Image (cartoon, rainbow, N blue to C red; front, side, top):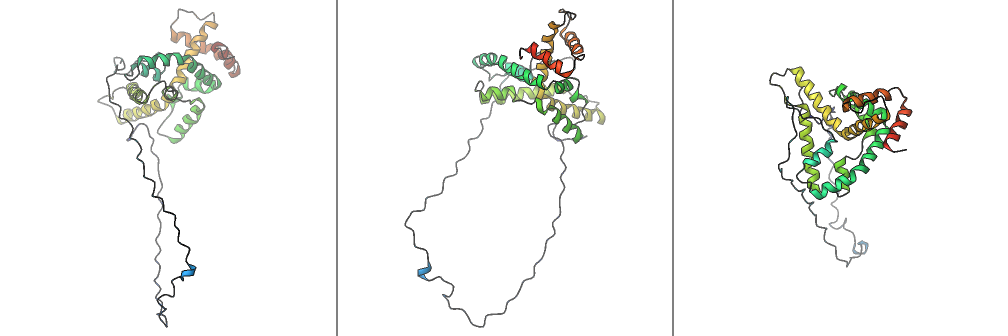
Length: 283
């Protein structure tokens, strides 16, 4: 499947033809008598009085300032596995990118760290109130979607819309914790991670392989919008492990999350929400 960009799905437009209509020119006979030369000129008394007020000059057009170009400074590249793909993160993508951002000063990072607990609780609240939706994302909503089909894209967008919030970097910029340069450069670091999730294309890729790769790439872009929400959900689930004595504290994080999710599956949605609110301290 060919595509010009992984961010945009093809949109089909229908062109309508418009028929032109020719009009006939009417030839009028000459008047019987030529009109007086001033017949159509208003008499002086009918003219409006002259104004003595000066006409103000037009307002000058002010050029909008050009957006500052952010130089591409060196930054700590993402770690890769043996297949050339980025390693999983232990924190939200935006935050991990900010830690690698050369435009984020120590003072900015100190303010970011101070703000994170408030941000975390805000995202936890969104996750719990839309628990059924984040559970669908966690179970593979994006990975199972066919992004070459408009109806599939629509389903994903509609499902995840209640989870959408202002991204962390936009939130920090709005609060003037980071500046425009740090904000703009962070997008480059995030994009580099998204490309790394897909990994390099194999040299012997078939048409089917390339189609699957394109579908994966589009899914990665869409899923990045709820990356922080999904990470927050799994972090909250891990916190909940201590509520179940049968879950061994020494087990791996993946095993503890799986065990908690198995226990949560025994509850109805309202009970799961109430349980996680208590764990999050949002009662």
